[in-house]
Image (cartoon, rainbow, N blue to C red; front, side, top):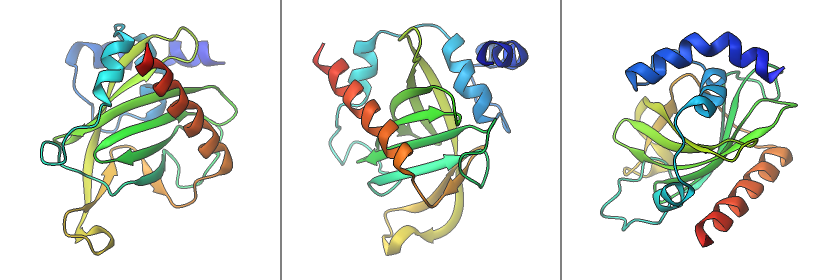
Length: 183
C-alpha cells in the first residue's frame, strides 16, 4: 500500500526536491512519504539539531508541551496524515504517521517561519530534511503568555486530544533520539 502511494506522489516529491521550498497546500501524506525519498543526512547531524540552545538564542514558538496535528480535524482517519510531537524550548521531537501504518520519528526546531525537521525513515533508518510552514492563526497571546502566539502548521489542523497510541509513538521516538545522540 505504501509503495503505490509513493508512486502516486512522485511528481510532487520531484517538484519539492527541485524547488527545496514548502509548497502551499502540500499535504502531510506527501511529506510523510516524500521525506523518505530525499537525500540522506547523517544521524550525527540529526542529533546535533535537537541539542538544547540557550533560551536567548532561540525564539520559542509554542509553549512546552505535547501537540497533535492532522490533515483531518478528526483523529485516526484512514488515509490522513498526523504529526504528534513534544515541543521543549523551541526544539521538537515527534512522529509522523498515518493510522494503521508505520510511523517515522522526527526531530528539529522552529526556524523563522517554518518548522525544520529531520525525519528518520522507519524502514531503512535514513534521515531526511523536511520543512513545514508555520501559520499565525491569531494575534492573541497563547495561554495568557505574551511570548507565544497561536501558531498553526500549514496543511494541518490542531487536534485537542492526544491518544495513548500517540503517546506510545512519541515515547519510542524520544528513546530513539536519545539512543542516536549517544552514538
